[in-house]
Amino acid sequence: MKFILNEQPVELQGVALDTPLLYVLRNDMQLNGPKYGCGLGECGACSVLIDGKVARSCSIPLSVVEGAHVTTLEGLSPAATAAAKAGVAQDAQLQMLGQAAIEASNAAKPASIAPITLHPVQQAFIEEQAAQCGYCTNGMVMALVALFDKQPTANDEQVKVALSGNLCRCGTHVEIMRAAARARELIAQGGNKAKGAV
Image (cartoon, rainbow, N blue to C red):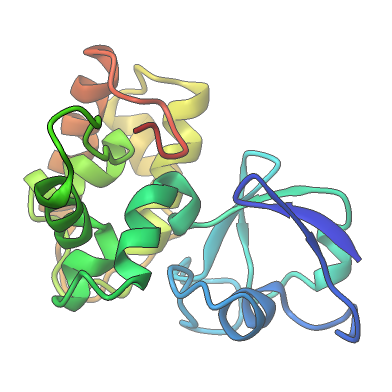
């Protein structure tokens, strides 16, 4: 069983092909960006991108991703994730978004090395403080990444449609919409499109 995970080839053996992709990502690959929410593919917390399209990893069997490109939250900024795994980040929400890891990593770098950057959607969520409990944030970010990859100037109505399958029980909807607008600005200003530019 082979697929591309966050731009890296992966080969799995001994894993049942009907295992939900989410279990493989979290348990076998140690990627905790995708969350287990409803387990029915309805809340969006487990969202990943499969060949650039948003997919619910809790209800997709591993067999579906044979030969596909799978991107998780960690794959949007691999350098930040590596720093987080090295134990740099402390705060759970910031670690999820990569902020603490990035700040610590950038502070430790010589001036001659370019600082780590986040995907514009991740950066916008931090700037607009669009995470409360943070459980839905993975799905919101992945849905917006998929939208803006295809429609960088998507308007608010298109954003609402893209996010309509993602549930937020904290009521952070206003902040999430502000983050979407800010992400649109960052993309227009030439922010890194995706996948961990450094």
